[in-house]
Length: 160
Image (cartoon, rainbow, N blue to C red):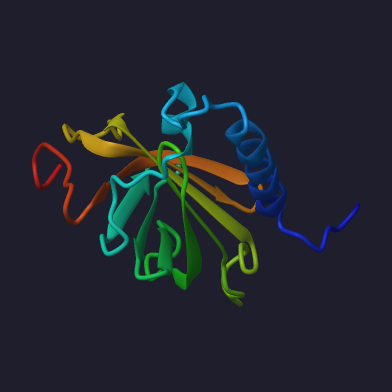
């Protein structure tokens, strides 16, 4: 097994940067051509907004606020808190970090990547409609779910 000194998301981010630089030369001379939209960073969630994420099968939840993420599961309802870095892409946000080591958890030290993109989302269990779709990768496990912020709440009943 080959171990890389760089997290896997670093290669993805590097590739996105190279593609963005290559595409920046393809726009029209005035800079207002069709490619201008593709280079605008997502601004739908302000940096001060708290983001709540959750998913089912398996049940998980997370909270992101102020450069920190707290990840919880049914087995670990207290959760684990660790720092994350925010990146605004073309159509959403991503957060990357590394889960802190834990003696009781099997995911200690795992790389964590989160993508939050706009779009109506249903958790499949409640009558709520969330304004964002969430994808969470913890180590080699990919989890799907929904998200909302303190300024952009879900629609539907407060208690499912």
